[in-house]
Image (cartoon, rainbow, N blue to C red; front, side, top):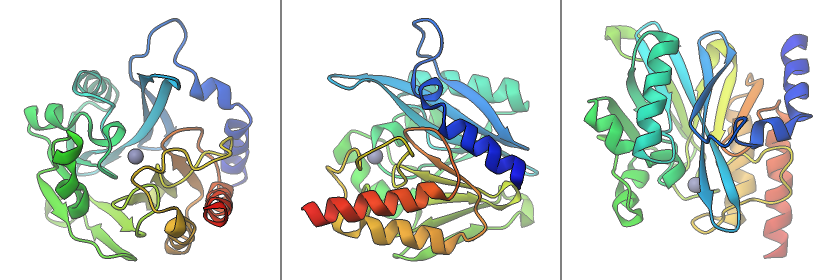
Length: 253
Ligand SMILES: [Zn+2]
């Protein structure tokens, strides 16, 4: 526990190392192990005026196969990511879950389907995906606000647990929890510690964001490692930080 907190604090204090693209000019995807059976994947996309934008997802090795949370930004980088995953874990993902319908989370769906990897997203994500130039996941999770879905490892299924807190960064954002390592992947709903604003709010609900972040904190009281899409992982302080940013933004609306 103490070790984990120290590691998290160290990561918070070195944001530049995580936000910058890897050494050299390469912006190819990377995979970094953060706990037993858990890796963060990173990919970068050059966005005008913002420069290279980091997006992170998760890879979890379960007893019933490898689980991928979110794709890389596009099909080519997702293809590269699959190679990294296979060389690191010995197998390609069996199942992928997308945490909402934006390019940084679902931009590589075509590659996943080309390799016949099973894909799941919230029904709202799959509905809106085509209008955003994205390919929907094969399976829809119909979750109402405040509902969670936990798939057990029985019958050989890849186990997973997701929660829909209602609108925040987007109307369809879900979070993923991996209990054995107490890792909560908050996606774009959760803001990095170094961030002073909510980031992209174009498809979001600023007025409901704080409540959504609070309900994630309440839903996963045991979570110790919190991972946002766009910056260093940290401890539960990232949840409070997000609530504070969202409360301030809502007041300024
Ligand atoms: Zn997004």
